[in-house]
Length: 462
Ligand code: NAI
Image 1 (cartoon, rainbow, N blue to C red):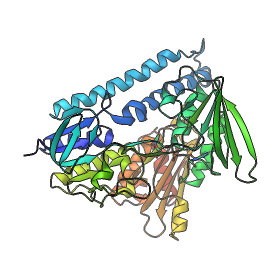
Image 2 (image 1 turned 135 degrees about the vertical axis):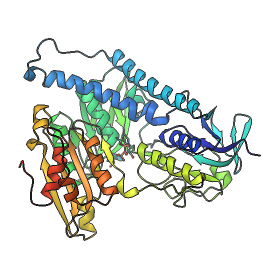
Image 3 (image 1 turned 180 degrees about the vertical axis):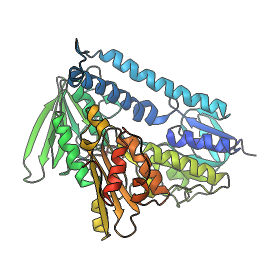
Image 4 (image 1 turned 60 degrees about the vertical axis):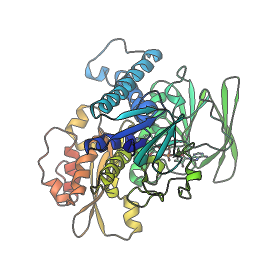
């Protein structure tokens, strides 16, 4: 008889959520996690600590740039880096211990250590073999490497090292204008570093709506971030504590260098499956190194499932969480399901950027007849009062049926505003449904309603 109904490998947002849902559904559940604390990359070295630093550095920015305008005068704060890191660590601690509490509450066993899967139904941790009817692999991802660039987590850092720098650098080069590069790049810019972002493509945040990309880049430049676009990084050398980044401009193949105290490598992540013994088990992988699954999170080995960053799809904590719940429900005999058409994406810079569904470029490519409803935060009273009027809400709706196909927001609390559109999309709503919904005044969310109105007879405040 198996010790457990389910063993989950990995206690990140995918794994811990899966375990809690499984326990709620009556499955005897254990989670294997080798890290000292629960929560995975997201809580320990990703989403949560970066948000603490984004919040703290934004407060400094507000004090430096907007306090005097509101009549708040006097000495503006200076940065105590050690204390800022301690605050960040406190935030991590309260979140990771919260997961430990939830495990106890739900009677989930935490098996401490690193797991291998010797055979279906078996999970080996140290010398001990635990047995389970089902196994879910939720081992997440790790930063991908860049040829010619050696990450030492001191001068040349990944997102992990960037959260524990010994001091705030005077200059920083960020390789990659994706989500990590822009979030952490804007933290260090606000804390006083000169930040240069080197991006291989001619646009930042590839895949995002082109209009948002343009506005986003302009607003980041206004904050002082510098961009070198269309540049492929060739290598980084470190000498006497200074890093030199060599890159080649794609347009004319010319080579150039830039020096910095710190280089942040943020050129993507790859699935982390090393050490599980998947090769020996014969688990099928995709060409991109992800665990291949069958649409219901099952691998080619009966009873072994995989979710989150380790499988295909956007590498997002909330996508992993949804898959965690769905796979637990499937294992418990229910019908778990994730709607991949309505997964929001958020960049927690200032202003925030959020999107869901199709971009205008995708709709054009598909040859779909669509309409655009756009509203600038300049027409939103609350945003003006809060010095947050940069940006807009853009809703894309089907030209004939008015059904919402996608939404793109750059502006204050975009990451929260996007969710009323997600709910509307989940219910197959038309833009008119949003437009006819009363929105409290004065709120940022009125800009969402105005964009919906702009899909019909027109917004009121523009
Ligand atoms: P990314 O895929 O978002 O961006 C990487 C960027 O690096 C791309 O723009 C790419 O063109 C560029 N690049 C690649 N090779 C290059 C080279 N040799 N020279 C110059 N530029 C180069 O990857 P990122 O930012 O590392 O994030 C990794 C994953 O983590 C993503 O899937 C992201 O969605 C996720 N994440 C999500 C967050 C959020 O939802 N707020 C926060 C942080 C990470």
